[in-house]
Length: 271
Image (tube, rainbow, N blue to C red):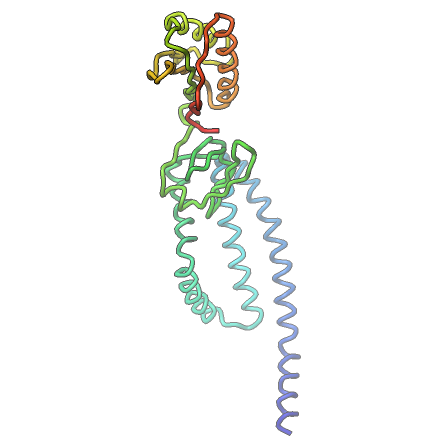
């Protein structure tokens, strides 16, 4: 009798709560769908309002989280969970989760700092934690970058602001660091002029700041010459490779013997 009574009680409870549970599930599914639709309008509105490309993804993610939390409260109320008790439980759980996810919270705070102080923004070419690439998106917890070799790089915001950030776009102009080695027997003024002429014939090299060619160091068997043209951020690699090509061609045509170099210096943004 006791077993039958308990089973009967469970059946009655299931019958009593089944409509509420079903309604909660339907509400959750429809609510998530509505949130998805609403977020599309919100994103469009934020873009139309003229907010920066770096701020729109951040605010969209934050609003989405808040709407889903509100939906969770609604579903809990439908099931019959007291909202005040639920808030207390959620707060306790939030505290425990917060302690366990201190790194994530730090990334969130760091994301806010990035948006406020703007060490970089969407579209900038930056070097962060030895990662070089263009910033594609600044999210709540991470900064999404696209490397120069077309790889997606995800850098936690906390790590991004905890180290040195090199923004290569801010000034709009980069110096292209190249090196050429010639023998001691070569006449340096002649070599210098040949290189200047080669730089002048290279497309996309800026005239201001003016390029510079000078002796960098005296090696054991040759002279190392610094070749320093300037280029915009977008034209950096075009200038890098075209200058090397034009300098090599010009030196060969002038009869200048280039010395063997064990390694060539890489420019300021790496390769």
